[in-house]
Length: 120
Image (cartoon, rainbow, N blue to C red):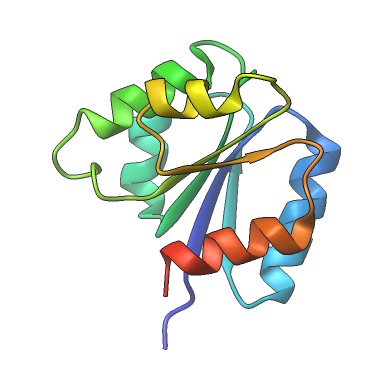
């Protein structure tokens, strides 16, 4: 069976390493990006099953990147989980048209459960 693919947009390298290791150990294939302006190219190349999106990410930010992705017919159905340290995360996730959200600092079990829920 093919591995499920997770694409992570975050500019925090420590966090990227941590999440990558955890999901790779869980049997996922992981790709990362520290900028979001090239989201369409990244998604076209990698074909992720799910995307984890940080809000504070260079160039266009998580909301714009997610909206851009969701505006494209071929990518609209890829679940996006918004991951950010923000009091208004629920509103931000909604305005970005994200499928779900996890607040930072997050509980890794919670993150893993959410990811699994969307890509079973």
